[in-house]
Image (tube, rainbow, N blue to C red):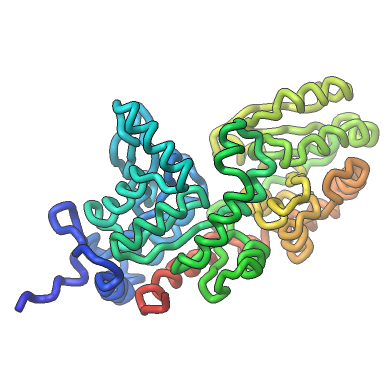
Length: 444
C-alpha cells in the first residue's frame, strides 16, 4: 500500500498535486493544520507554509495595492502567496514582490491567431482557456492549494480551473463590478461584449459557485446577500493600511495660510473631482490662499483642467500626476484636509478607497461625500465630516468648518486613533487567515 503523502511537504513542479476533483482537498486541510501548529513561531520553514494562488488575470503585478496587502496579511498568518498575473515585455517570468511571488503569464506569445481565438472565446463565454490553464498550472506546477480570484471578469475561468484542479476557490470582489461598468469610459466593443447586464448575470452565477467571497465593506456583503449569496460564505477585508503608517508623531495642522486640501487616486467622472473644482471659487472667497493638490492620473484630467481654467481657479490647483506612494503620502502629511468626493451611485455605495484610511492614519481630517460606507465610517470614527455628493456649496461649507484649528485637530486625532484601535491591516489580517482555516476544516 502506498503511504499517504507528507501533508507538510510543499508541492513543486517535480511533486505535483494529485489530479482529480475535491477529493484531493484533504492535502489542503492537512497542510493548513500543519501551518496552524507552527503559526506564531519565530521562523517557519518554507516547507510548512501553505501556498495561496491569487489570480490577477490580465493585469500586471506590481502594482496592485490590495493584492499586496492581502499577501502581507496572509504572511502574518503563515501562508505564502503566489500571484498569477499578466507578463509585460520587461518582466521576469517569476520574482518576489514583497510577501508575494509573481508568476507571470502571456496568452499565446508570438501566436497572433491563437491569441485572437482565445479573446473571441472569452468574449463568447467569459472563459479564457489560456488563463484557465495557467490557473490550473498554478496549482499543479507551482503548488497553489487554493485559487483566490480577484474581481469579476475572470471569475468563470477561476471557478472552472478550481474544479479541474480540485482546490477551493475564493472570489475577491473589490467593487460592484456591474455598476462600475456603467460608469467607466470604455471602448464601444467592450461595452457591447461585457455589458453591465452581462456582468450582473456572471456575478449572480459566480456567487453561488464560490467556496468563499471576500468584499471590502459591509455594504458590499449586504448587496451580494440580496442577490442570493450565502452570508456565511462572505467575509469583509477592508482597504486599510498597516499600523506602521500611523506610528510616529503626525505633522502639525498648519492652517495659518488657509486650507491645504489633497486628493490622492484615480481621476474619472465618478470620483467627484468636478464637484471639488466647482467648489474652489467659494473656498478661495473665504480663504484666498487655499490650495488644492490632485495627485493621480485618469482620462477626465483634461476636462478638470479646462473646468478649473473656466472658473479662474487653475492657479490654486496643482495637478501632480501619478506619484510614487511615498511621495504621495508625504504630500498628505503636510496637507490639512483629505478628500474623498465620490459621486453617489450603486458602485460607490458598495466600496471604500484606500485613501480614506491613509488620510486617517496620517492624522489628517477627512471630508467625504455621503456614499453609504464613507459616511458610515467617518461618522462612526469622528474623523471628519460628510457633504452631499455633487453639491459644491455644501462642500464649501464643510471645508470652512474643517478649517477651524480646533475642529481640524480633533478630527485628525480621532481618525488616527480609529486606525490604531480598529481600522488597520493587522486587525484585518485574521479575517483572511480564518477564511482559509475554515476551508481546511471542511466548511465549504
